[in-house]
Image 1 (tube, rainbow, N blue to C red):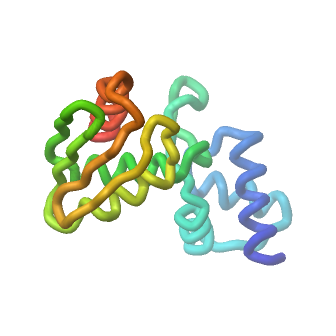
Image 2 (image 1 turned 45 degrees about the vertical axis):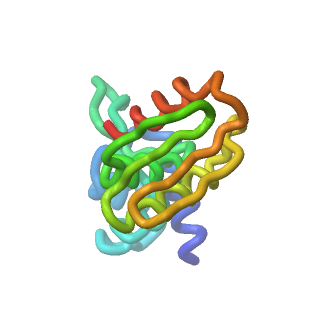
Length: 148
């Protein structure tokens, strides 16, 4: 059994069954013939980028693979580093903690929002250049929702 096979099995298991804990996942894999340890499960969860999301039986948390892993990274970065958002015409100025602008702007570029032409980053500020100013308020709201 390779790491890739095991991780594919994990994705299959969580897609078919609500798995709430690492122990439940360990037992499901063992039932499927995979001899693994809890430490291996923990590493696999991290490598696969699995998150817990409410929605299982009775709204209980369960492991899921995020549909947009880059968006999840962006949300984490925005939540941890963005301090202020403002705009002028088609330009959005985003302030971050010192050293946070480059990573945040790179992820904005990676998620490819069609109305965003690109970004320019400094140390604690980055500029988002939009095609026009019509959708800027909507884009800012998307960014602000990432900060929550």
